[in-house]
Length: 297
Image (tube, rainbow, N blue to C red; front, side, top):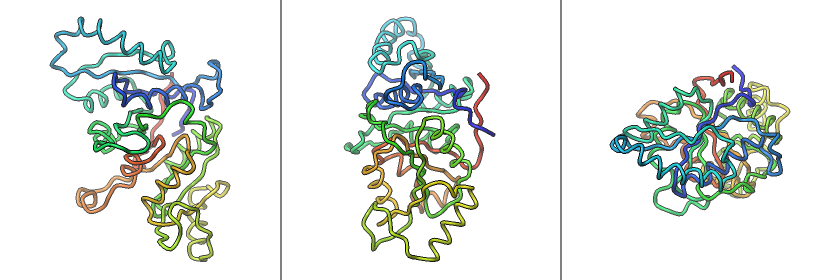
């Protein structure tokens, strides 16, 4: 199944608070085709803005709409998205998590864009937020989590990063990353998070280990990725990846998610959730178990 960027339907969770600012800015960057200097004629992805309201206030929907819609329009105008998105649509439900799951299915979305509670520098006790955490666990479609304080110029980095833990296989995630990098005019770098405690944290390791070189070559061959730049990061794997992302400032980090059982999740931290929670860049999490194909326009 192929990802056709021009046909991609993206739902962006549009709120009134500061947490959706980064998501709206990223949505504009995506709609512009990934260029900070793009013209409106280059817009490609179709954006659908959804604002979630609790079911308990549905009886006041007419009055609420008169109050909320101008505020949503103002948020979209500030992000230079007003008139470029489908919506904003007001959606009612028991929780934001349930509503967004329903909207993804009903609107046949290919991508979900969420704001993260924490800023890029990860200040604050609540970082990811309950809605994003639940959606990343269920992952109905590939989902982007964007730090709250990122703005449009923050997505000007040259390379999209595919973050891989322990040389795990991720062919579906790699396909998504390659197609996005091609459509957005960005290079793709494969960064392997491996424990190299004798190396500087988050710095590319100078490889002189024949076993490691062979393992990397086999990974690239299995994924038909011999032409891509592939690096191994130093230090502890998880914080090393965060340091690399902070230094490189990529416009997007792509991470695979492999389904794991309850016991495994309890005993092992989730690499994609960790990166989405703490990274200073937008993070796209892709479910390796099921391929995702966009729907025809």
